[in-house]
Length: 330
Image 1 (spheres, rainbow, N blue to C red):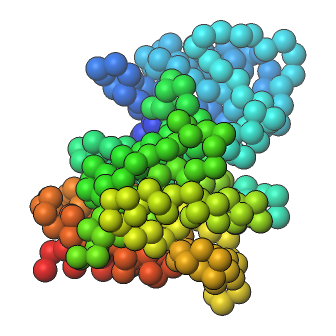
Image 2 (cartoon, rainbow, N blue to C red):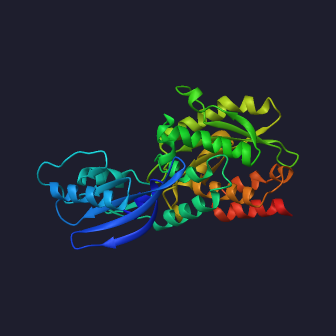
Image 3 (cartoon, rainbow, N blue to C red):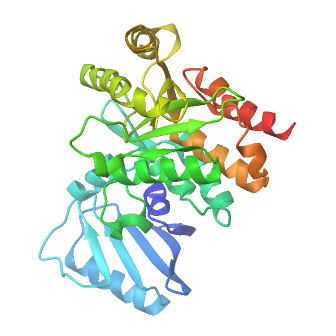
């Protein structure tokens, strides 16, 4: 529950355990002030009197809202009000299933501690350095909408495409053209990226894949990537850029070691199209963008970043990004 509350944009300030419930106290930025909220998790079935007592507690402590979580269900006619929302077991499971901070093992949920640690650090550090939405990228890549984007009228996949392209072009100063939603229904990637390439102008196709469990390339996706190469090569060459890479960005990529499905796909795609496949995790790209902004790397050095060396790694990780950014400082 702590992870879910935090993911919603609130900051947990206190935790209390009682005989029949646990309670999280949190604060949230609403308009121009910090507001207190509470999340109470019942250890038994919730009854109407529990809701009434919770409302009384909220009023007495000046809290603006509360969530009464009932994992064991409810009994009786539960009152409905604007102050308290009762979340039953089905709703709770649905929230677990759609949270980027919950991992599943043998159909049992647990906190994804590695994701939680990364996202906490990213949100904290990016608070004053984020003109392009880098703090939201890892959540979107897990096919979830951050609380701040719920009113934006777009799905996580659409936001992921927009913000990834914005980050690559604004923060990293790559060139290119974004297709995205404008090309929906057409056989086009999300974007075509271009960069100087150290005297050898290069280009890459970008496709973003929002996935809660990590991306695995299907046969249909592979055929699409082959088509993208044929369709977009002429556009890349029209500006003197060699189309060399197919870059896929997602939350994670299922597989490990030599048996990772990436290797077979990479070999086949290179043979069929001449393109080199690269897998990039959203969290690594976001943290790299944060590093560039925090260290105030000059525009000229950003434009000299060796993207070819990064994408040549294939299965790109945070260490590859670190080495690329370090090269811009020398």
